Every structure is written in structure tokens, then in C-alpha cells.
Length: 290
Ligand code: G1P
Image (tube, rainbow, N blue to C red; front, top):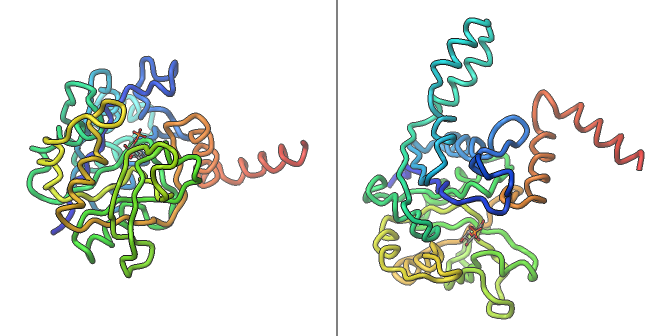
């Protein structure tokens, strides 16, 4: 059972980033020198996945264009002898096979994933949410795929969050699994009201799912916020077969939140081969001057 496909929902409106996202998709906001979504796609590629399925909506064509071959730009760069830049752009369009499906109505994350049902087919697949960036030595997706090779069941990426933030996440309750960093899921709740769960294990946007999830998503009624929630269908799946929550190694950034986005820019800039040294020096100087 190899995981070959990754679904990346990109249909959201990006209201948290208005007015920046009025005319451009939030996934195209830049972190240092590439759009947020490119980091996710690169993580998928580095993890050995073969195909990406974007779940899009109106106004998201910039994402498809970004990963497509741009004949005009390529010709201009060749003429100007900007070979390296031209090659980098071609590299982006050659990264991986990408297809898109359209979510016709904004009915929630669960509905967005369900939209990809026919393209995924009857095989386990990965889901990655574009807001969650993870900096780690082994890509987060790869860590999960390694675990999947051992357990062969659905896996949800989690991290511990402070108690006063649990209501912002899907929360997983679990028990010992006998494996390091891994819990056997017993219950899950989307954005629990304070005091309704003791767990601090928050779902981060990386999942490996068994294909049965599609039928369950088809039966899921609107939940938190009146939306069809992936978490609710996951809870149903966890009652039918084993499911694991995995505390990945690495630092996660919520790039869909303004402060998280700024932190991501700083962290990724400090890792950028051409910028890291100068940027670190600048930061150190600025901090010392204060
Ligand atoms: C979604 C999921 C939630 C998860 C979160 C992680 O929520 O529904 O379970 O904890 O992503 O980023 P959203 O942030 O889209 O409201």
C-alpha cells in the first residue's frame, strides 16, 4: 500500500489576510522568495509522492499558473541569457504531476477533501493544508510516510499546544501505542469549547488517510461553524479501524495567521543559502541596538 497522491485544498477565501488576499490567493503570499504553497509542494516532492491534487475555487488560477510552464517568460529569460533563473522556473513546473478539481461551494474542509474522491480512487492518500508550514530535517510528510509503512493505517500529525489555544484546533485524544511519538486515537473534537477535552494534542495540517474516509465524508453533516468537518469524518473512521496521531519532529508555523506568517518569514530567511548570514547579522545588530 504505497501512498502516491496528495490532496492540497486551496479553495479557502483567505479572509484572515485581507486586504492582501483580495486579488491574489493566500497560498501565493510570499515567504522570502517563493509562495507559501511552493514549500508545501516541495515537501510533498521530497517525500516521494507522485501526484498532487489541488482542490481549488474561483480566483485561484495563479496557483495553477505558478506550477505550469510559462512559455513567454521562458523565452524572455533565454533571450536575456538568464539561464539559471529560467531553469529554476522550469524546475518548478517539472516538480510533480499536478491536477486540479474544483470545490463548487465553500462547505468546509471535509467537503473539499471529498471533492477529490474520484481522482484519488481506492488507495491511501495524503492531505496537506497550505497554512501549516513545517521546518524539519526530515520533511514532516516523509516522517508520516515512514510511520505508515509500519502501521498501514490512517495517521494524523499533531503537536502539543497550550491549554488556552486548544479551541483553535481539531483536538485528538489518544492512548499509548507502544511507539515513540505515536498515540492510538480514541476520540477527536473539532475546536472544542474550553473544558470539553483534557487533551492538548492539536491536529496540524498533515494527514495520511485510508480511502474509506470518502464514504464517511459523504455522510458527514455540518459540524463546527456549520461546515462539513474533516475531523468529524475522521472520528467516524477511527471507530471502524485503527488511527494514529503522530507528534512529528520539527517546528510548525501557522502561515495563515499574521504573526505566524512573520515568524515563518524570519525562520525561512535564516535558512536561505544566499540570505541567512546577512539577515542573521542584521537581526543581531538590530536586537543589540535596542
Ligand atoms: C483545520 C482543521 C483543524 C486543524 C487545523 C490545523 O482548521 O479543521 O482540525 O487543527 O486546520 O491548521 P482551520 O485552521 O482550517 O480552521
